Image 1 (spheres, helix red, strand yellow):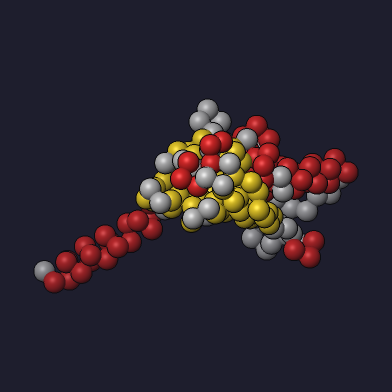
Image 2 (tube, rainbow, N blue to C red):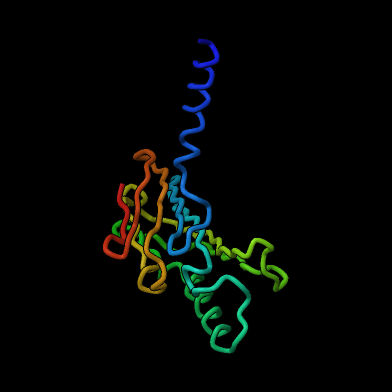
Amino acid sequence: MKIIRILGFAAALLSPLALAAPAHVHGAAKLDISVDGDKLTIAMEMPLDSTLGFERPARTDTEKLAFANAMTTLKNAAEIFTPSAAAACRVASVEVSDPFPGGKAKADGHADIDADYIFRCAKPAALNSVTTSLFKQFKRLHKIDVQRATPNGQGKASMTPEQPSVSW
């Protein structure tokens, strides 16, 4: 009986892990949104396939141009994320990782773009949503899983091309 309880407890502990989304899903991205005082932070992880359709260093001139354009778009936080207008947020910093450090692909064949966007908001109490244009910019992107931590609590949501906003 004790072994059954232990196994049941272990299964209960592991079940959230079994339900967790895989780390790398083509057509999807992840956002972690946090609000701390006047600072809005958006951390993004997106497979390169969701932006370009391939996950290797660009080979042709067309691929190189597409990669450069994607990186330029991803570095323009004000273009891809719109916090609540009433909060009067401005971009403070942007960091977009190179998916091919040293110009080389990862051994597992996957490449992600990781980015951190920080906004400073003049009226943080009015901050209650973020909208993205990522779906318009990257047609291969179909879903964004969002986790948020704000003064109003924590939560999860999904963004889609039909619903490109998250509110709290």
